[in-house]
Amino acid sequence: MKKFIFENEIRREVTNINPYLIDSDNILIDKAVTSICDLPKMQVGNEPYDGGNLIFTDNEKQQFIVGSPTSEKYFKKLVGSNELLKGTYRWCLWIEDDELEEAKNIPEVNAVIDAVRISRESGGMNARSCAHRPHQFRWVNRSKTNQIVIPLVSSERRPYIPISFIDKETIITNLGQVIYDAPIYIFSIISSHIHMTWVRAITGRLESRIRYSSGISYNTFPVPNISSGKLAQLEIAALNIIEARESYSELNLGDMYDPKKMPDEVRKAHEENDKLVDSLYSSKGFSNDTERLECLFSQYKKITGCQSA
Image (cartoon, rainbow, N blue to C red; front, side, top):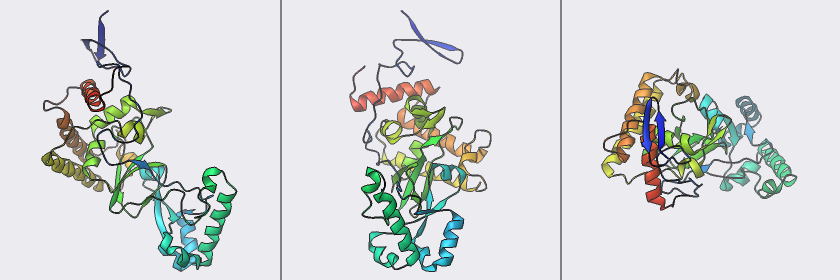
């Protein structure tokens, strides 16, 4: 029986149609614990399990500092997916182990620590597992230089997931995927159209929105070997996107990546980046997303050595 794939008004005869509706072997993409191409580790951010005691709105933080001025040094900005997209933030008390004794000398801070301990001791297994260090979130992850942050959920309408490249001082909640101390070329790759093509094809959905995950969306993404010359170009392309965004600071990322509101300068920077990342896979480029996916599945099979289902 003949098999055809239709794209727009073009009908193409193919040898096989796999579960992702492309001309490729019947390969099923399985969750991967680490990147199949040795990309830097992506993980979720910091999970509080604090009973709501370590996290503050801007007003709550200001009131706290008025009553306890010496506590200000322990506050850090806190963001998750929602804050990243809306350009907002909250605050959290962030106390390193070597600061604990000094922090506990502040009565208001010590009261917060006690409240967290009580909440965890009366909570479930995960909460009780960190009751012995109530001055910190359950998970404690920090960057030394920078961090690339990907919202867990993003609108399917956006041409790209709004990915952030932010400073080391901001704390990311467990509602964001993070690459700590990431080389900037990674920003270029995962901000590209070909990566979005992969994500749209294989990742899960929350209702109709894209649910990005490290195990499926990132760790399985096939990336060819990159020459030093290409790496330098990818870094420049990433910086061009970031610089273009900075010209529109009045827009939050959610609005900036709305297809109806995306500034031409930002769109152009992404399109230039798309061409560059595409060139890693094909010197001739691609006519459409079907060709991109067929190439990616071929690369995936080659890298993983997986067999057809």
